[in-house]
Image (cartoon, rainbow, N blue to C red; front, side, top):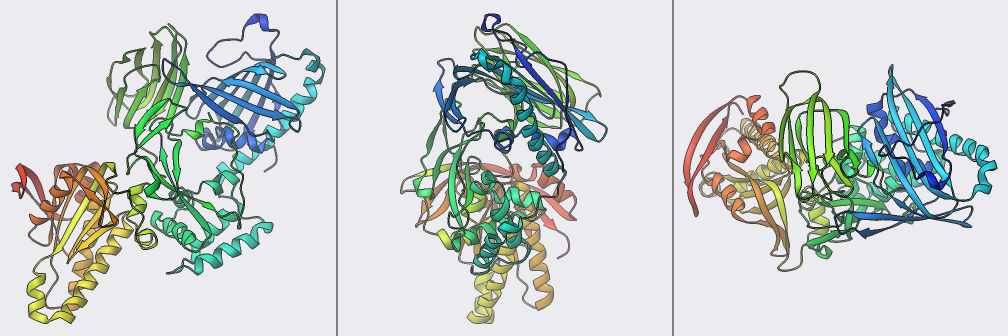
Length: 629
């Protein structure tokens, strides 16, 4: 796609925080450009707002960042970059980016050294037919006035560079992903050969996609390979791409890194080659917060190419990019006593409002039902918290109005509470079959463990297995048990679960969501039913129980395992099973996705109130008996 022809717009004021730089610092120079791109704003935004990548594509130099904690919360962002082959050094403080999802973003930089005093850049995305009219505005003040005669040449150069970068971004947004370049074919072939040498081998489409990615993707995406993001981009099963990445580690094509992510910015604050090296507590200098790692949310496995296949530089071009924190939908900077109003469109779900300068959060719940039209969402930011603390509205177009009641600038963030679905977390990877085979000894240090905020455990057992051994003998019975394990393992793997352990004829499996666990349990029931239909007499009867909640991931007998009350409840739910049924606790059967799956599956349900062995009190349970199979 060729670079679009820009048309220069009339000068516009800086768009950040509605504040112009100080008048005594000299005249404001303004550049404004307009681009028409054949992609709608919603599809263009993830590419056009990725300023880290755009700056690299535009030929800007890398930036070194450091952070200084602020007493009132948050941190100052201080940066340094070099221009003209390192001869000109720029030092500046960057205020936090401001943005509204799919609409606009802006940033201000105040320079302590270099040819500029202040700089403001903003981009606005306007829908236009089936495409986007993107307006870029750059406003700045010079420290070196002798450069003013050169500004027309600099403006034309910068405009061309960013025009090419935006054209490439629009091309990628239009899809499909670009194919590998001819000069990358040797690297691609080497990766394919290595994946084919894995045991078992990884071949076909998953191998081809991973090999092409390693050979031809941008440096940042090869330095930080996320298997689930690859799967989503190419429409492949997540387990398939995780399998391919782990095969790459097995054969020396890829390295595996564990990272602990900050709960606010979701940036990696710890990196380690093994789980044993992870610390329970972390500190994020950018957000100025301390936090504990959570195995199912903030511990992520990423992959990278080994240097002998493809060496990539670890360079940063923009740390505040909206795409570095895609869970944040809106971020605005409010001076003391000031009010801002924005309009945005949000789907049903749970969101959170927070500010580093405020001690509390506000929860925003958007419901599917409600009157049409824009509803006001009004909040006030105080040092002690955000008011009101709980907001319930109908989803759709919202008029968001906020006021800073404090005596200092306040950064107000509106974010999704759900963690990124593209992250391959500890729960996803550590109990994955190939990972357990490759890194079975990788576990936490003795006495250490990490919390799993919300995990679903599914226990199964074969009913009457002891009598089966007596009735048909050891060898035939063992064959049946082995077949049964194969059915269960396939259901676990294809539904996003992990096999934690087997105990005799019993299985303990973990899942990220109750819906995944119910889907796997239904697949197990169907698989056992098919096996019974094929083998006639002496049918296999499976008992199942599932529970969801908080657990501790620990090292037990040299391997990762779960510990805690919720583990005991899940095991006792399985004991309450009669066979051919699934016993579920309220956190499982009340989950929306699990409820939808059950509603689509013919079954008989029975409400139970039972004591569970070794656990105080009675429990409300639901026995689900799928029909057929």
